[in-house]
Length: 510
Image (cartoon, rainbow, N blue to C red; front, top):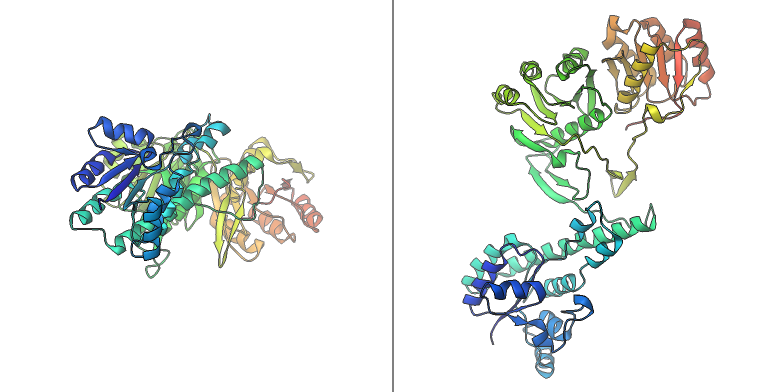
């Protein structure tokens, strides 16, 4: 009996060459609609599916292949006598190869002007059904959903037939593909209903790269990207130079991006182990980086730097004197690239800073589960600012408080930031008590703490942090407030003439 292949693709990349090779091997080719027309126009002999089913395409193409003469041919076991008997009785012939890809639903809903009607019409029904039928019956049927598999399948077919291992690999790919396809649809429709926490949450990611290892060399790792995630992400960065990113590089670079998003003026952020070690702002990007470097010239060694302006020659000269893992910027000048690429391993990444979108949810895995939460996009301008002390902050102190509040939300809790209006001076992160973080930040700031401000990501449970701040010369403090002992901290601030600003919003980062 002549072997048959059913071809029905939205993405026609490579399908002509694939069909031509199948035709040379003696396959009868079945197809529908646009695929049939495209192949016939290019000289390939095609049998229309409706010639097999004796039933026309109806409902504007919504029903084409949903027929027993198609799905019987896909699902029949070739070595089952009862199946073969039923096929003969019903005039069903087997289909040996299925090559299908689906309506572009994901691409459709990504369009800014998409309508619900457009989205609904791009929900493929017949395609996934054929794919699932063929994949279920992969013991006998070769099913292809990805054009990159055409060549490998043809090589095996020239040797007789595809191997069971290949058919199973392709079937697994089909079910991954249809699962992802359904996840886009289910999440899109769920969003339309406004249901925040559906009873089942299905997320899909695409492999971006396999990694040499994870956090440590004995851990395997890979990086997956969300196809519908934020454009302003490491997953969508363009790497201009340097070796592949590591697991830790990706984590640190992501942390740097989240901080740099806080600033409109020229700003530079240096990150180490997912915490900022220096943040600077200035009239130029070179000036901003100078301040970020001076904020902690020790910790920046081996760190990640993000800048929100093009890296020019002046900035590049500074960057080139330090060992850095990654530099992220919207662009690099030709002179900057010439200077920085003299270092073989440094990674230079560009990201479109003009499209600073944010993912709808942050996700964190725990053993046996997944936590989701809204991103913390609450900033100083959103806060209900309340000055709790007798002394009011000066205009310069207010600017410094804004900077400190923008940075402290990105520091691991318990978090304390000491800064002036242009740069961080000391950062205390991840301590088990707040005064411990304050002592680290104040010690790092040293003499520069005189006249500076302090930012805290959460309230002071006792007045000991204010006492430490006063002894170091801090003149203003910003914190959420909300402790039962707030008054103790207010009284201590009043005692030392410190201005204290309450925001009403906590910024824990675990």
